Image 1: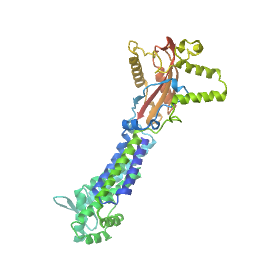
Image 2: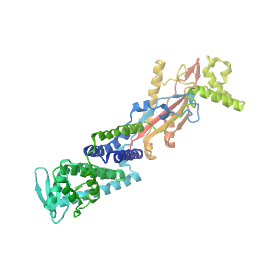
Image 3: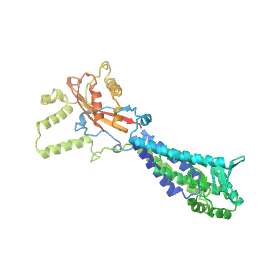
Image 4: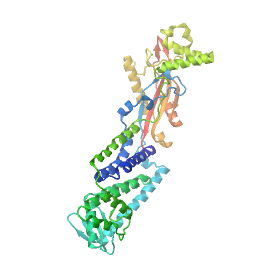
Length: 476
């Protein structure tokens, strides 16, 4: 959840930067309104989008892969099984019923924000009740006694009786635009965002931008029906005072007057500048690349003209030459490698002492280990049957709820390494994950696998080493 929120903040910041740098000073007010309403929603949606096609077209070094040396083992001898994705039971519902300290803080912030919102609504209702109501075909007019207030909320316009008739005329033209354009819906939308994301300063910035933009829209349409000079003078008048409520359209907001006059005097932007909105396309695409690809990468070969195997062989040769000799353990490891590359190597007396401990890669072994119940199948089907059964066992046995107790969130990866020895038993189980509890759970699940029919090479039972990635996403 925290990672998701951070992505929302980052995306909203980027969207606001694009708006302030390229769009804010243009007179395409309706386009800007759509931009300011759409981009906060996009910032919530984009982190949830994972496009496989983008992952597939990004160079491999930028996509997370199983490390070449897993847990210090011999990666070239391991069978990398397909990744198993588990469903986490930690949903948003569990976020609500099992709160942490941070969640209690969020609840408190929401409660305070909602209380302020309710107070503002009650203030408007009270003004409606105390004022003199007049109903027209398009809006409701509420006259407020002994005040010079002027603002609108949905289809109701509030005007103080202390205003002159000329000023009332100008204000009504302006406020009727707010009513007709449903500007209050925009402000209520951001008010709801402020309640749920009270900790996010960018929501407040968005609300200020949309408030200013709405004044530009209303001014632009109002001056088409009155003298522009008189309208300017009306704006410059400082006699208006009104309570500051963030989701009403106040005619005289002193902090906006200068910007409104500047925009009124500005000539219309050329249509060619509408191409600026195309900037949204690369911005969104960059965000999709970020959300679709994982952060971790794997390093490629130092020399791209040489394969990884050749690079590793050269490294071994250099290491032997530098050291001048090998220990018995190193000699056995080298023999195990030569055993796999020598025709009929399992029948060669030279390698007899390493046959029992030999670990055969899955793409080399003649007869793969067989899961109970998969015996009467072809080799290809046996491999598929093996993996299907492994998936079933892991999905049924792995207790993803233990992550709750550790306050873990987001995507969790556990890499399990185990061996099916030459007797068919599961041995040498190792695990690596973000938390020891998850590692122990992964070991427990793999240990529960039944005894297999061991793999065979040249008629000899051999050990086979597997590497199994397990992944599950803890949704908050």
